[in-house]
Image (tube, rainbow, N blue to C red; front, top):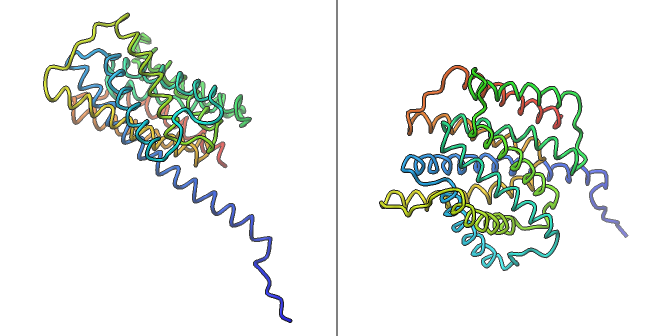
Length: 304
């Protein structure tokens, strides 16, 4: 009687690794697409700020649309919007994301689009630090050196005079909060659907912005069709970017995946020049190159 043998068991690890590589590639593609979505979102925020729409009102509009689309997504996929596990982590993810988003929106309204984006995207430096605490990923001498050099890049972006204005402070605070949010997404892993992340982010951002915009700013209703359209676009682009970001982070390693978001810096420079006539000076460009080089070097160092 002939015995039909299956494939050698030794090939199984190779197949697993091939699947992991495929998932990583998908994650990088999704992260790149999310960068484009967030860059378009930032451009809409900048345009609204030029019409004197307060930043927290823009955050509120984004959160309403994001929460609504997130709930529809949960309904479509027939999943609970509250999730079934790790809810404390989801609340932390929502709080960190909401605070970081509010800080970044404020920075965009008082800085050039490119400068605010560059400072905000020091996030990979902080995500590497958080990942060492929360995920057990290494954070060695090279990472510490790159972090220090990255801070020098920030000083170039905020201009040689060294005046760290509130816009730059807000962008930096947003970078730290965003990095924490990214690592929480990695912490909870694939067991939580990306739509659930969107719902928690949108709900906590909705509550926080609804309260704060009346306490610290003076909201006003959009007056023109273009302002209403931009408000809608902020929410739609943010929703698309958030869904792609959450899924990309789940598929790819934290460091290399977040590096793909550096494409947002490139998009911000292009949109700033073409839409708002924001011509970057030499210090801003040099600072951006220093920051991007450091974050890319940290990611590649961890990956290899």
